[in-house]
Image 1 (tube, chains in turn yellow, cyan):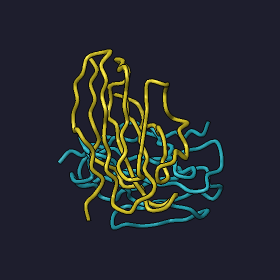
Image 2 (cartoon, rainbow over the protein chains, first blue to last red; image 1 turned 120 degrees about the vertical axis):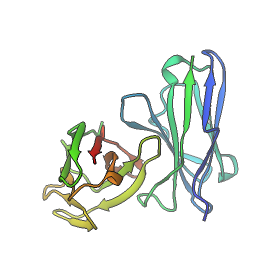
Image 3 (cartoon, each protein chain N blue to C red; image 1 turned 180 degrees about the vertical axis):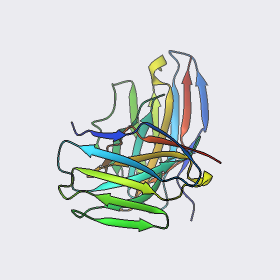
Image 4 (cartoon, rainbow over the protein chains, first blue to last red; image 1 turned 120 degrees about the horizontal axis):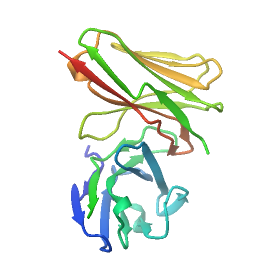
Amino acid sequence: EAGVTQFPSHSVIEKGQTVTLRCDPISGHDNLYWYRRVMGKEIKFLLHFVKESKQDESGMPNNRFLAERTGGTYSTLKVQPAELEDSGVYFCASSLQVRETQYFGPGTRLLVL
Amino acid sequence: GQQVMQIPQYQHVQEGEDFTTYCNSSTTLSNIQWYKQRPGGHPVFLIQLVKSGEVKKQKRLTFQFGEAKKNSSLHITATQTTDVGTYFCAPDLWGKLIFGQGTELSVKP
């Protein structure tokens, strides 16, 4: 069974540019989560999808971040325009049911210069 | 909002020594999960605790959930170099994992 995959693995962009991160959850997992770890800090929750619906987006930092999950399969997280403080590792995770094990993807390492 | 404090932040041990990391919350938790992240890797689920006073073992790893469900610990007996990484506790609030700061373990051979 394939795990959670994320693309790209690394992204280096300039301040003000746009970046789109993609996450493919484990097949059949209705629950998809985005997390972020900024350098030196803890991993922070961004949002939670159940199928195509946003269940909880309380962790989204501001309106420069837009997450979508059209069709309830893969998800994208767009940052527009990117700021220096957006640099970090963005993890996606998926689970079969809420409160069950969350399986994390390898992450996308974003560097905003 | 919900927060968990994890100590110590760093731990350096000699291979063969024991290691313990502690996780504390100011509020009662319904459950707590533990994750391990290897350097450059991603969090990998280790275990979930839900019952007051629960103790679970995985080979050399022992996980405990406090009686009041406000604290948890992970103890590794006789550390090995393969144990290197950062260990996170994370209560699950209906899908939202609240990660502690993590304890970074280094093991000297």
